[in-house]
Length: 209
Image (cartoon, rainbow, N blue to C red; front, side, top):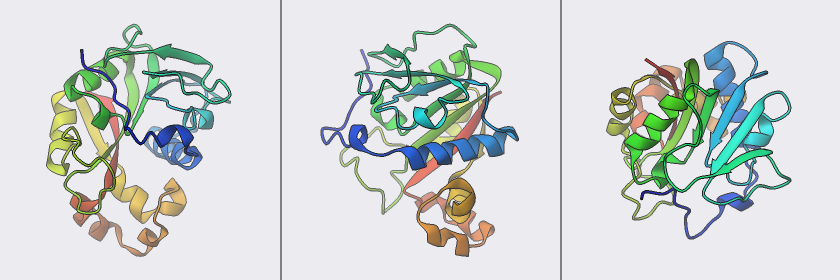
């Protein structure tokens, strides 16, 4: 059975992920054209709950992971999983978050299909992934499950999603999307888009087609 994998270095459980939470919130607000308030949200691979904590006050947030590594019980709704299969009914969530999880599963298609299944027809799925095409990608040495840039959009579309890229926006509008590094604000958007093949990671907002 395929499972979600944790790096042997195990850094994520100790990291402050509040900036990533703010970034995801900003991406979702941009894509949905409204504040992220009053939604049902699933955080896949929620780890220490740092991302969920950015949404918990005004939304109903559920987390899943292979281990319970939450801090302060966030999110308070939590399910253990041991595969890409999600223990929820169809169309159960307005928003599904998969922040740097897809590179830790053995079956990319099953991961995407399950998120497509549990998100509502008018819902949104946020996916972030490292980029094996980048010469400056850090970590993930020897992990062949890391996607390359040319694979990303076709894979998401193959599994029933309309794809909107946000990696280049986060890079060249760091003040809006809480991005890093900050010098990206000096790069015009058309140039930022031309170089996105080499970005070390990418963010996408997916909608069921």
